[in-house]
Image (cartoon, rainbow, N blue to C red):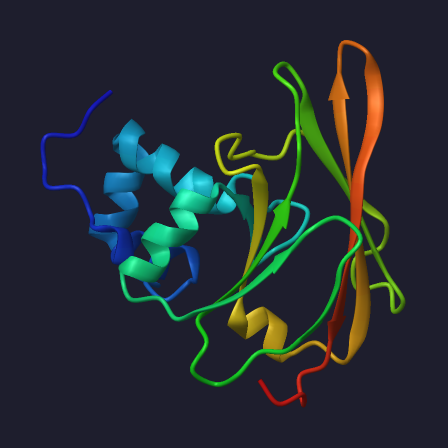
Length: 181
């Protein structure tokens, strides 16, 4: 089903995802009746059911968010790397882009675990992979990150395909909200 009215811009859809549009009945109605816009919002929230305020997104969508005016604090890691990370008052989103090497027909699964139980051994299957860039991106609202204490997060990525499962790498985030950027 398509909707004949004007579609909301990316900034409005991001505001909806960030829960900054409470009470906007026209937007709610549009999202319920317009498949294209509904799919666009699903890009942000559909994959984040197990992790509220977080979503795995293709890198080009993260680029669009930044181009639309969202202040994105971005961390890019290769397999085996560790990064000291934080969030600052001006940040809207925190993006963690993980470099991967996948073969055609493989999907990417993630296992997240941290030292405090914030991510209680969460497994997420079939992440959206930007094959051309060789990466997957976890995007979190800065609001969620501001309320977290210092912790260490391990993200283990695996490729799953016809030949079975193979490790892609482990990526480690040392989050400290008091760290200087």
